[in-house]
Image (cartoon, rainbow over all chains, first blue to last red; front, side, top):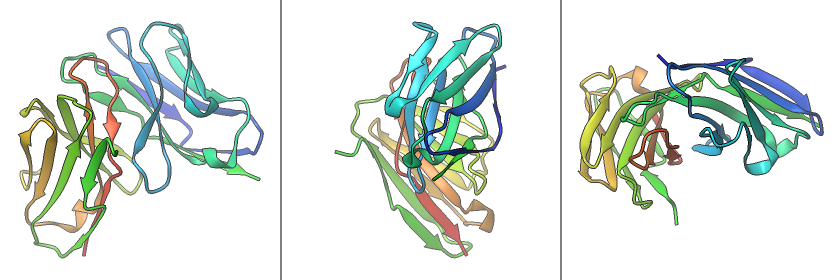
Length: 114
Length: 113
């Protein structure tokens, strides 16, 4: 069965510092992986997705993630944090079935300090 | 144009009442979902419909009943509201292909008092 673990429920960085949000997955089939962002009082927005085309995936707002099969990881990074990046970030894996179900991590709250 | 729209955005109601949340998507997607997000931000899928047919029905009290009049709409009706139903409810939609991403509405914050 598929599962997702996000390490660190809260991450705090300084403005301009590297952002690293960790996601490890477990999947019995080749995984399709997603990162979503949720700004306060808003819905979830897709940041990027891995669909086996390339291991380094670039997304919106300067974020990228690298799929590492050997480590079963799909960590999200951004070279330089902006204040506007403060949000909740969710990693998800597709369950591989025809019902289009996503398995969600518990989320990581990112704080950006001036 | 809002891709996935939910109404109302906020809903405050008393215990025991019945309420509905409406959702519409203009993306031409065949699959729609209802999610519940609790106060700790945990996301839980409740239901999923594909072209008006129920395909996911997680362990949800039968006080919750989804209705899909057509593939662009998925409404959620809740009977006999309880304090524990207070949460943010998100509607989402996706294409009817495996491993595809979902597009979310802005959420409905339900507060039961």
